[in-house]
Amino acid sequence: MTTDVKSSARERLLEAAATLTYRDGVSIGVDALCKAAGVSKRSMYQLFESKGELLAASLEERAAAFVATLLPAADDGRPPRERIMHVFDQLASQAGAPDFQGCRYLAVQIELKDQNHPASRVAHRVKANLTAFFRAEAERGDASDPDLLARQLILVFDGASARAGIKADTPAGLIAPTVTVLLDAAGMR
Amino acid sequence: MTTDVKSSARERLLEAAATLTYRDGVSIGVDALCKAAGVSKRSMYQLFESKGELLAASLEERAAAFVATLLPAADDGRPPRERIMHVFDQLASQAGAPDFQGCRYLAVQIELKDQNHPASRVAHRVKANLTAFFRAEAERGDASDPDLLARQLILVFDGASARAGIKADTPAGLIAPTVTVLLDAAGMR
Image 1: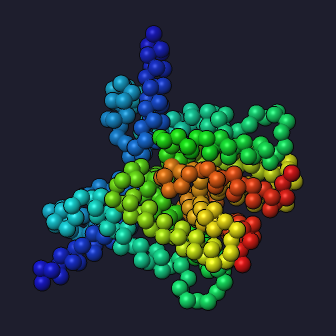
Image 2: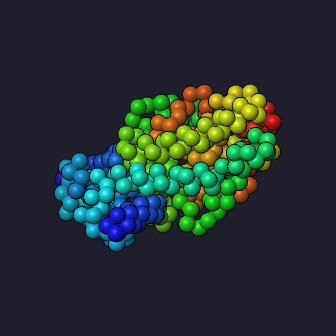
Image 3: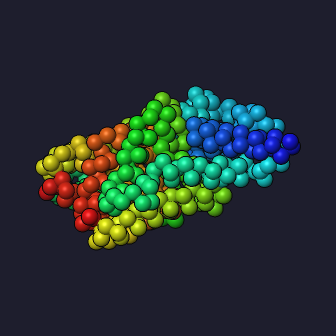
């Protein structure tokens, strides 16, 4: 019974951290997080060593969903360039939502300004995995320079989601043509 | 005499706001800003209505230097694509510095998460002016779609500076080849 309650408090804290830091930023206070989760500060500090550890854990927990939403199925049989385009189609679809604030893994690193923060390290790893997906597909598609293409694609991913997040631009008519130009220039199948 | 002292306090506050928010983020407290500027809170609130107004004013004051550092001279006689490349060469040079944290005008909008904040409005305008420069050069260089090219270039500007700022990538071997591909695809002179 005690374990059940603790597990539930943990889940509510992870959810509150993910939702509130995305909406309001990493400077959100522990009081606000605990209040939103309906958990006492004492319980929070029994579950997480610090607010930073809670934030890192919330990013870690979202990582599987982030990957599942963006990446195509491993064995979908489509050509590499279609598999890459799938990621950007998913991004364009997410970025059209009114509450879209950009990629949470980029935002948290920009906001924390400390690449050694536990949450920054989680965010960096999640995005490095996305870059590795681009790199593997670029190689499979015989890109002239798979490293360069992967770096270009993650640059477009971050640039487009940041600009959509601050409402400076929309993904429509921008992401797909830009990715297409880069894939073509790399001679991607 | 009183005017001199007030003017100097104002300058010190603008400098502290620019330096500390760039280094630590927009959640930096008024106490820390006043302490760094050597100005009392009372004096600060006589000069600026709020911390938000101080932040907006500090971004506004930096805008002229931002433009002067990035943009080529209006009458340098170089072809449009060289004038565009000049901006990215300057970005690459800035982004190589160890204390580079990305574009301050992008960061402030991501951090504030409120496009109606006075500082977000200043930041948005400064970047819109950079996009307008790209748009004008794209038109002069007979780009096939000047609007699209301008949107692509500011996307690369923001994506590359954000990723260099979080130390996820470096500008070397990335920015110039990416911009070149986009200029070529647009048929830019």
